[in-house]
Amino acid sequence: MKVTLEEIIQSIYPLPQQVLEDVLEHFQHLEYPKNYFLLKPGKPCKYLWFMIEGAVRYFYTNEQGKEINTWFSLDTQIITDTTSFVHQEPAQESIQLIENCELCAIEYSALQTLLQKHHSFALWYIKLVEMHYISQIEDRLADLQFLDAKQRYQKLLNHYPDITNRISLGNIASYLNITQETLSRIRAGKI
Image (cartoon, rainbow, N blue to C red; front, side, top):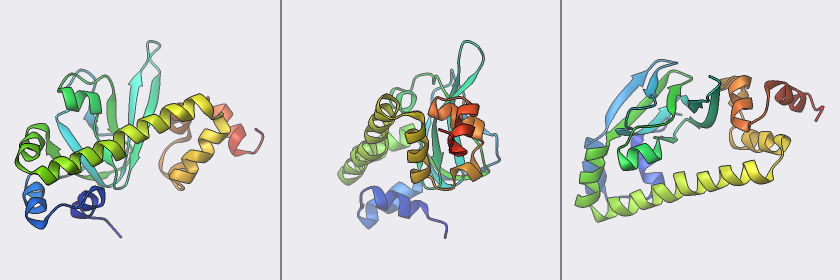
């Protein structure tokens, strides 16, 4: 069953009905096809997107021209380039849809207005940052430091059980910081 924007917002931190209605008025509903870029390097991230359905990848291109995946967001998750969005400075990464996506977006300026207008929305935003950025980034860094490739893959499968049906093995290997050959050996039980 497809989730609504209201359900996503309320799952982060419940807002009073009047505040919720004001917040919902500032979002736009969007649908984009697979391979569409929400963000490209050099452009400031002007939106905070809420995924209703779909999948995206975050990546940068290294000096050798190889794309390195740094993150995935799937159904009901929040999407943005945090540093670029918060500071309104040019992004270093791309955010590309890897499935057709249905999203809701709020502009930076509208978000700032709502934060100043509603105390409960400011509390909601703090909870969003705690849940979706600080803990996820800390978790990602710890995974890369303390887990081996097989453990990182298993953790990814535990978090996203159907990820191999939705995201290419090449993109998954890049995210895990391993070669596709190593990922194939892990999947075959040879590691």
